Length: 575
Image (cartoon, rainbow, N blue to C red; front, side, top):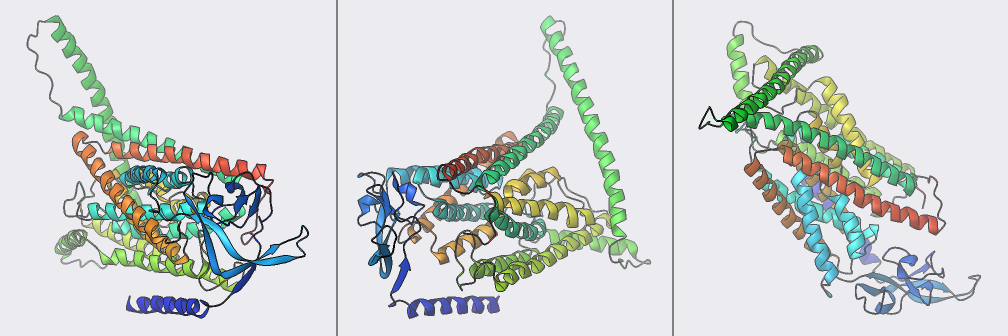
């Protein structure tokens, strides 16, 4: 970690030296591609920072009022770059030009002044963060449309701001969940760190390919894929919630005591008793069916475990003292499970974070430029794109192997598998979970949604408890959101001239929203004793995200059609 810190410090030093070397330099640039095009409003001149609409023509701004939607609009500012000049054409054929200072419209600083729209967006961001933190999906599918529609930001600034908000919510969620214990194993932490270490690397691999696909796919196709995927996931998650709800109904009916009849001869009492008997028979039938299925599943898992053990390295068990060896093994497993923060599982996630961070700084990403000037399509670009994949693949393999070895020890020592525990086999660790996480990463990069919207339902489908799924997904979000937020901050991709005011404000809003969401979910779980509530919240959040992101995608596709923008596929390194 010390070497990594020194390396990061060297990068920052070189970058600072480059900035100091050019602070007094004068740059001359060509006019913006949209300069001189007809417009009816400022939005016709591109996303901010961009040109103003002056006399129905896109031009460089001269005052703050030219950047607003109206004379009363104080949400935009005309920013002057004193060290940059632009060649402004003075003739229609652009053969003659003059040099003007570069000016462009930007968003105002957050508190200059703090407008009604800022207050509304703060409140809605608080609710979106609470909803996302409550079910472990982050909330980007709600925050990005919110910042675009309410605040009026372009995607270039809305996405970084959503990442900062998600980061704040993820910190709050981790603070709340860190001391909590597994509902059925009081000695085990609620967050499944080993599961996170195995799921996060393939998700990051998928993100790399998803971003490439996002650059090539047309907006209309992304819109179709977005609505289709989120609608399907929301539907499947709702079905999972219904199954869990039915299971909880049986458990509650089993615990409930039959009503005491005051008068057995009373007609109403007899009718009530007969109805109660019919209900008891129905519940007994359902319970018998569940028990039968559970026993069948247990036998199948045992066969799968025995088959998987054949592909693992042989375990040296002393024949003479086998019973004592297995007992010691069981105690050791319980000791390892009780570790609050197992660094053996967390360290691979830190390595993934460093790999992701360095790759984003060198190559750029999410609209941020490369800090060292590496151009897309160059040989260095492709090397730095694919070499880190080897590290992520190796981490996925090693974490999966550790889970399989641990699963073998649990089975051989006759340790109890708590409800929601997965029997980790070669198929589960090298095919099922990595493949689903790869798809989640591709969806995150291609469609602009959080990977948790795909990984959450996958974990539920494989039997992981909703409370464990939510806490583990939020822990993974903490790593990805912190890396992207730091990248955006270094690249200066946040709104306003100060930028840090937006960053810290919405991190704070996300933190408060995350705390509120966790407290509300905890209250509901304690009051109703139903974990299916978490599943329904997840399904609702995904469905709402489909509507919000679908609306934004539709508006983008509509704008491209009206402006005559090519609706075909593009190259990875295209404009």
